[in-house]
Length: 315
Image 1: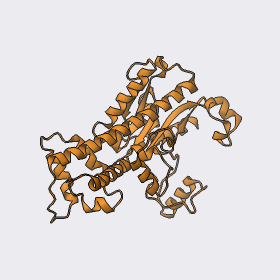
Image 2: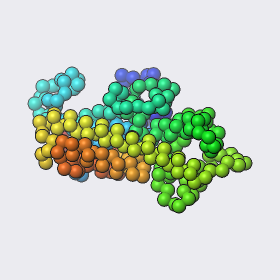
Image 3: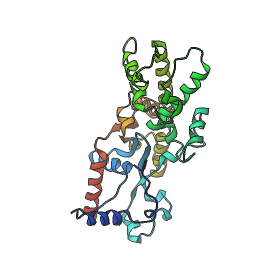
């Protein structure tokens, strides 16, 4: 994950393996760099090693990405860099890191809260889909909605001070608690939000207030899971077309290996996305489950090991 790292100067256009091994040798570490894979590629490698129906992967936590197996013929030769002709004659498919987070700017409806988030972001329009569906941004959209509600709804309860002044001061884990709370008075939600206030705060948060918070969280995550399903369905269609498959045939069935805190742990998120995927597949006269979401635990570690195993097999 690149978030929070400031390591551009001196690294751009450099061989990461050489840079890492140089530091390891300086520390006299007895290690060898055999393969470098990102999280989406590692997840796809890990789960397809266990399950041959896995042809796509999804990362969805703080950020998002996806990978897919595609035939070599579906990509322009320039995408493969400087490779010998023998490679093209021997290779039928490649694992493609899609950078899915960067898509969706002109295709997905947005609200003025989304526009507000985008305008204040250090990299506006850089990752449009990510700004709409991932944990970091779901919570910020939630905060922006509440700021507007506090200023326009009579008798609206007082928000925690940090929520008014500090961007990204709300965490998606709080939204998850709101959505998972089944207590009659939403007591779990109240217990989760109270620590956000100063110890001497006299703020009263009533059950209707908590119900309102939950409804906002549900609306935001329902939209997010729908957008996610739309993106994955589009990627599935791309794969079917690249493979020359009719979407209604058994060969078009795929499993999507999923990893990340939101897709694995957020209450109902993956299930909502699965329902929308089933609906989208149904429009094309497919049965439910043609695109199936499944979690892939410890995939980053296992995927790196599979990558090294693939290299050993080739060598």
